[in-house]
Image (cartoon, rainbow, N blue to C red; front, top):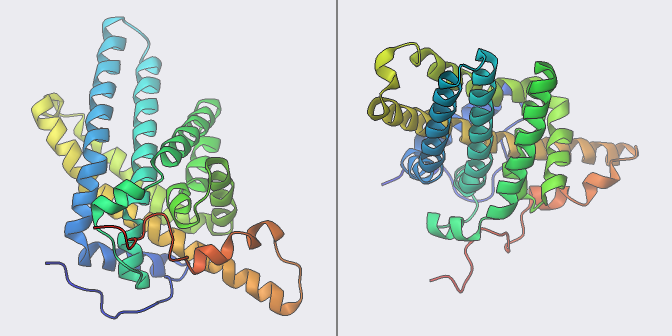
Length: 285
């Protein structure tokens, strides 16, 4: 049985600092580990299975056709980036309720209800568009690709938290992330890259290429590590939204003009309406 959060009622999001996000994220990961793992299995396992099989097939096809190693690398990179982006965007949407309950004291909902009320199509479209832009950046030059990875790091949570559409979520993510670029790089992108590097290191061993060895290891590492990264991503999104509101309120108090575009979004991000897309309704059995 999961341990309840230390106190009930409305609480403030984590501070937009490395320490604040990491401490809050690790706390949620520890207290809600069982439920996070279940959500990770539901989301990551099928996606990781498809990504692993597709990457292996692309590599074998390229090798049999005597293609250049560059083609093999591009194929593997494309599949890996697509799978990672889709997984994290979708997973962040799924576990937003778990993080909000644990860190903010919001109302809980069963995982089945969360999945049914998730804006699935928008999450998939946002992940697809973000992947296309990131891959284009990586192919043109590595730096723009990695830059976009950081700027689009909280697209999934924003779609759920603020009920945004696809292009609006990409723009909103970039605006929130830019003032905290190093923070997002540290708590989201670097762990994601390290997870991929772990897979690359294991690929050096011949025993790892066996499907019955690789698939369980890939799925297990994705569930454990990816689950933690997802929690950090959602924690970060709430922290950046709250920080943007504090800065906007500070500008208003000082009489300076604020960002008119953000005023339409911020209040919903800080105090969610009871009719949020994934909250429990009275009609739900």
